[in-house]
Length: 138
Image 1 (spheres, one colour):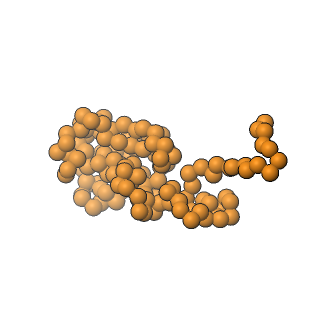
Image 2 (cartoon, rainbow, N blue to C red):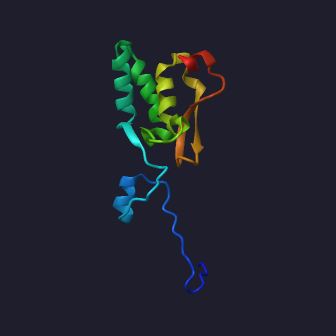
Image 3 (cartoon, rainbow, N blue to C red):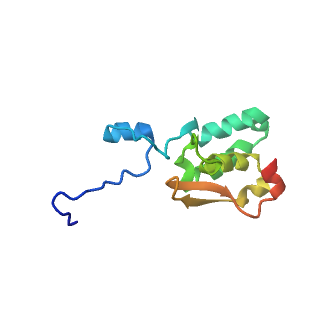
């Protein structure tokens, strides 16, 4: 349905993919790839378990199940829990917000929301402006 002049350039958008996805899908790795990331956790269940084990919160009845329930119902549930090498901290905002949610009191869980971030290609969890600034520094 697109008119291309003979000898004209045709561009194919590859989307936002990691280097592993590029190799598997297209057979090459781009020289620069802003979508490359290093996963730190396999999924939200692993993040919750390790966070709770680290600070002892797994011993608190209902702590893990309440937070896991919140995280598993997000559109961003499958978003990578990762850092992006050489990128600004904002590209790891989803992972940071997930850990903030885990550190939050039960009454603060409603102070998180998810938004679509086009620069990373998926929904990410974010703390809303109502969360106390002192909690962000903790």
